[in-house]
Image (tube, rainbow, N blue to C red):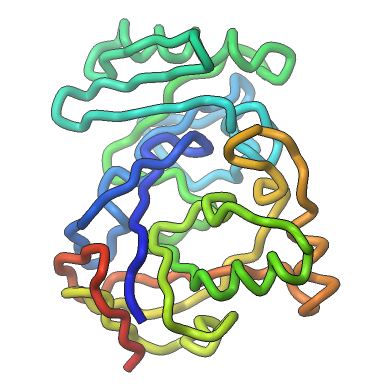
Length: 249
């Protein structure tokens, strides 16, 4: 089994950044992954006392399919965020209050009627805006996605599932058998602790922003569950790169 793609999502719900390699640290997820989120005006998120909150408190694909239209890029060296909707774009310096406010104003205007008050760019040191409270790395076997494509009779971009690691070389859904086991991922060691239950976010086409595939329903009909992929915690850090091996132990 080998790693085919590594991705991170600097802003929760928005577009991915592909990476050739990443350095994982114990107890952490992929660096810069879900570091930011656009909090809805009624979310009550407090950056001074951050707690895990459900995704619908933020701009997210499950509730806001239109955010798939946005193309984003984040430079952690300069703290610069690019937001683009077609020909309309803006760049914000997230190291300044003015830049963060400008990003919030831009996304609020973009969200239109789906904005519940003014959205704000949320960030808190050490906090990640993940779909589960635990910090983890998410993995999906591409054979699992292919099995679902065959079942639905429809091509599915694996990016619908927003995983950090996509890999080949295992039978469909073989990764579910790793639950409770350790896995060598490149130079890191991880422990698989949870299957990923899928929601309405996976119905959204990441290219067109159309809600065009009932993925959770199809999974339930075919396999009796709505799961695709696994979460793993990093036990021992190390370098992980495209092409590296994955070895359950």
